[in-house]
Length: 334
Image 1 (cartoon, rainbow, N blue to C red):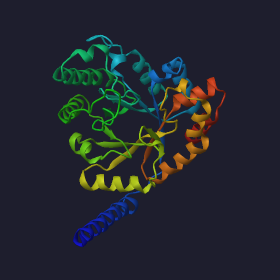
Image 2: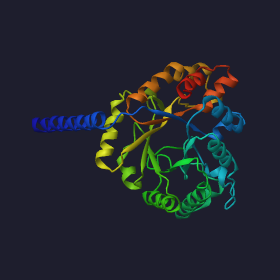
Image 3: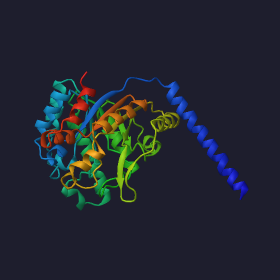
Image 4: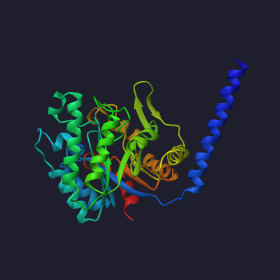
């Protein structure tokens, strides 16, 4: 028994030492750059909140003046009927971004940001798993072939948290399918490719080794909800991300790591219409937003995309509260 306790103690010390090494290598050796800020925007979520997405999109660009955007290509919207594609909404967003010299990360694939994560078209569910995989690969190919014409796209993001088990009826992307998707995108275009993982719960290395991307993106959520604990604020210092970045840089060739979702809206356990405003503002408000910005700066990552612009717009235009919008504006408009 004593031997076992000693083994655990020694193992813990070794692990702690390795973590310090990774922290040191990331904190001291890697250059610390001034963080750059962008916004993730979901046109379908804008519509869900009761707005014309074009109006919200233009208001966001013209008032907040982001220099960087992350945009989605939801499968159910782009291919509502098998073989029938509708690229108009995304085309419009990319054309406007190009006019305003905004750099875009375009997400392609089945698993994309915003609940339910997998935005499957209705016809997809009737296929076998093998047929679904082939349709998914075809969708990625068709998407990249169409969207590569837009110069505003600087980075392709393939899937969203591909190997992280999260989403309603949304299974992980099979590793072989993820590798095939990466191969398709590389064959069609030479712009960099990003893959992502959960910041707090993801392991990072497996998805990076599977996909072999040029850039790695991490989410950054401070307060979440699950059925076992209720609302929980992660007790993780910014150094946690430095350690994980150090591990990733040590075990893979990846050096470019970015924050793709910095929480700036409440984590909703119920739909917004079923969540009272006081609860929403307790979970996220300008002070918490500012704290999250400072937290993100301390992680040392070079770039962060704010998550929740559609909710800020809802607060401003339907609740008369411009606090979140103004906080973002102070950060983004130099």
